[in-house]
Amino acid sequence: MSRYIACIGILCFCYSCGHEHGPHTHTHDHDGHTHGADERGDGHSHYENQEDRPAFSYLTMDGEFHLNPGDSLSQNDPRNPSRLILQTSNEKGTLTRMTFFEHNDLNVKLAECGYQYIGSKPDPHYYPEQSKTSVWDIFEKVEEYSGNCMNYKYVISRSPHGDPVHMHLRYGQDVEALLAMSNDEEDDRFNPWWATYCDINRTTSCD
Image (cartoon, rainbow, N blue to C red):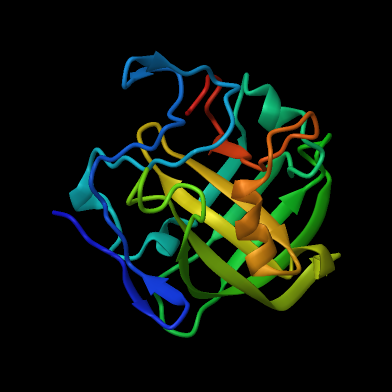
């Protein structure tokens, strides 16, 4: 079954859950080109077990994740927390809780913050010409539980998807600025910013 974006104003809700790929898939051949794990960008989503997927992608923001093993662009970018603990539910009135850990230490907690999902927007680089599933979920901080949550006012996520499951995340003070990073020129400062996270127990690449 496919789902397509419906937009109200600038916010877009619910998107395609089909098996679609953008130009920067990883570790497999696509359109005659083999992509390595260090290639930048991720314009794809793929769902092997559609019947198990929540109707709304932000409800997959649940579980513990670490930076993609063997992916140097994710591992070496100092902006990326080393570990994430995510807690969400479909129970009415609840927040999505996110815990961020120091880039160089899986055990040093930087902040634990509560978020409200406020909508979804398509990636400005990939959607729709290259991928109908490259859509970011947007979260706004509404609670500060511990640590310095100021750095994480907004979090945008390519929420957990795929097989093996993986996700992508950016954070900052301005949603439009975070989305625009997809169009940044490739450079030696890890831009465009495409951190990839895997399930905490995974020891090989998930992307």
